[in-house]
Length: 198
Length: 67
Image (cartoon, rainbow over all chains, first blue to last red; front, side, top):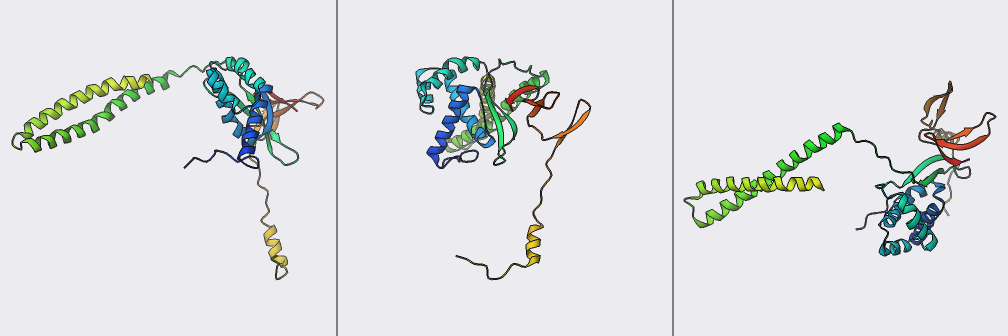
């Protein structure tokens, strides 16, 4: 089952909604900042940010996928050549929504949605948070894989040797579980830094 | 078409209407130039010049939109 759309529905049907969002996105890319209702802006944000992500990729396939949403080639050209370089270093969050007030006719909450085109100045990461993350993450990852690995290894070895001969099982089984556990530890230790690197 | 069978009594009309209540908005209190101002949170404010003419809308020290 497909997940329902997050946020309220717009327009008179699915096609109308697609067109509304595509036109809003095109207007946002041409004017860099548009005033609309809060409901529409909240639906527009994921659509526009996805298109900007395509623009950052910048190849022909990405351009065709954007053209499938926004029909206007001029707008898409501007998006790929002018907007994409400005948000090259920004990792998501390409739009900003600011609430302005309520419209006179229907009391709808109006907002200004704009592209965030300022150069990125990343916050300095707090030393405490990064240190805590570095210390807890490998410890937790190293401990977790051990327990299930040991259990599975004991089960496998014990069942195998029960099938072969019953007399000498106990000593050999314990020996092999010890060696297996050691090998799994080493494997887990090797895996853990690779996972951290991702 | 469904039609009411009886006249609605004054009492029930008034009981229904007694439930129409406006709830107070949650406001934030800020002090600007010595004046205490109550305003809605997370919402751009109108900047005016000395004569009270609205100039533009501002949020967190940044010009957001024209009025």
